[in-house]
Amino acid sequence: MDFEYWWLLALPLFFVLGWIAARVDLGRLLSETSTLPASYFRGLNFLISEQPDKAIEAFSEALKADNNTLELHYALGSLFRRTGEMDRAIRLHQGLLERESLDETQRLMALAELAQDYLKAGLLDRAEELFVKLTDTRYAQSALRALLEIYVHEKEWMQAVGIAQRLETLTGQPLGMEIAQFYCELAHQKILLGDNAEAASSLQTALSENRNNIRANIMLGDMAANNKNHAQALQYWREIELQTPAYIELVAERMMQSWRALKLTDEGLRWLHEAVRKYPLEETAQVLFDATLDLKGPEAAYRMAHDEADLSPTLAALDRLLQAKVSGMPDGDLRLVMDAIKQHLERTAFYRCTTCGYTARQFHWHCPSCGEWETLPPKYERESK
Ligand SMILES: [Zn+2]
Image: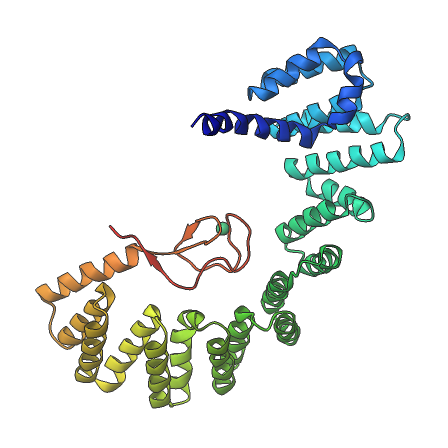
């Protein structure tokens, strides 16, 4: 019991020590201890008790007493950045860079700090300029990561591809999924400019970078369908089943439209029926039902909905059963009940990022909150209330 209690006390202490060690070169600090002013230690105390504002005050005072301690500058600079005082952080690091006494290592460190200040202050052009200078130094990895963030933010997709490839080489960590998404974004830009040939070639590159990139197949299918080449569109969209079947949800409606355009509705109904039977696809089940009701009439739709509700009696399945039952009937009480169910289903459906929990009514390939790629599953979640 005593042992566990001791650990409870020690853990936060280690955390604080780690935090300080990450920012201040502890060895150097100890060797300079005898020359440091008392306010430095007061500053450290405030840091440990999580009072950054008072720590800033004490460090500033210590700096007045001894302006030559570089660690003190860096500690204060990173505190400014942490507390969002970007002007002061920038001034401090710029001041350091103007010193002629800095050696190359110290100059690079000040440059790296200043670049981070600019990034956090949203001065992306200036940040980019400095990070580019740092890509061949020992700060290469953090500089490349920052540049990637900047290019994604500015939608400079070819630049993003180049940086991601350099990061792959440097770290050995594969970024094919991200690179493929960058090519999809590039294709999107080309489509808006009316350059379909370039767009198609970007999408093929996306697939060669990551053959599991579903978005490229969706977009290639969309382009083909827009050109009234529905057979080819369906070919691209069918590929999705071989990649990740759950994403059929995103294209089921478009697929059915193409089968209608080709007057191959029976083939379409068969394909969708097979897909719904093999995988848990809620939206696709609705598309299949709507098409069956429209093409085969209420009785066929009712039989289908009945079998489905028998297997898994979800609210959506019961809703379809009712739809089949009242189709063709005049408006009545049952309609009201159905409208209520439909509204409930729409109101409670959302996509949720598996990384940060961000929720959205609309599907995103790139999470608007945490910036990760392909973290929203193509399946609606529903509030349980
Ligand atoms: Zn997220």
